[in-house]
Amino acid sequence: MALDILLLYGSYRQGRMGIRLADYMAAGFEALGHKAMLIDAKAVGLPMLDLRYSDYAPGEAPAAMAALADRLSAADAFVFVAGEYNRGMQPGLKNLVDHYLKEFDRRPAAIASYSAGRFAGVNSHADWTVTLSAMGMAVVPERLSVGQIGQALNEAAEPQGDGGAALERGFAGFAGNLIWWAQAAKAAR
Ligand SMILES: Cc1cc2nc3c(=O)[nH]c(=O)nc-3n(C[C@H](O)[C@H](O)[C@H](O)COP(=O)(O)O)c2cc1C
Image 1 (cartoon, rainbow, N blue to C red):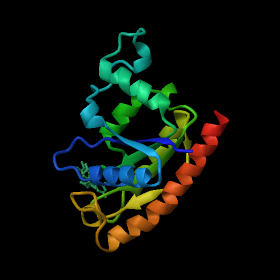
Image 2 (image 1 turned 135 degrees about the vertical axis):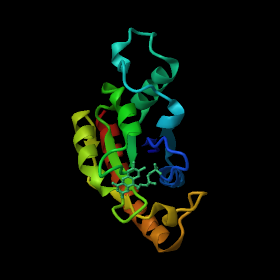
Image 3 (image 1 turned 60 degrees about the horizontal axis):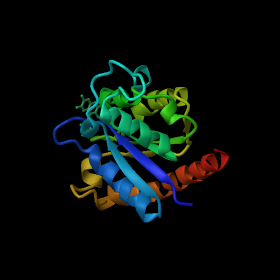
């Protein structure tokens, strides 16, 4: 059963690196026969949180916010592409997430983290686990953690070197775990 998987990414920085991991995983899920789509917070362009989507009267929310609500509600699973700023979450992704609630409910969520150095973004895992659980998602146990992202993936999001080889091995288990949970949740829904 093909799944509809969204990859959510929230860096707004010039020259951002995590987009490579998001693109790599989108291609990876597609190669496994699933539909995978990047939700790039910078491209969606939601404001710093003022009103949540649910605060608007029907038909009154900005078009981009309403379109994303529909897209989130239709998805079977979410992958949070999580960078690490000062050992915590990236604010752009958290800002996007906070605009919604029930649109995320009862779907599995996986955390794929990265960083420029060796921490591989793992310092953001605990915060994201708490937040995603609080919002009604089932956070799957398998994690993907990519250190030295600029060396593991080139500008075309192609794995390279030892880091790229480790990423490819890790992605296979990560994707398989998320797909299992997403199929189970889809059947339950
Ligand atoms: C504000 C800021 C804080 C950072 N803090 C950390 C950190 O705590 N741990 C870490 O491993 N890397 C840290 N870095 C380096 C990031 O891992 C690196 O810049 C990465 O490429 C950021 O993701 P992005 O390029 O997708 O924005 C930080 C970078 C920035 C800009």
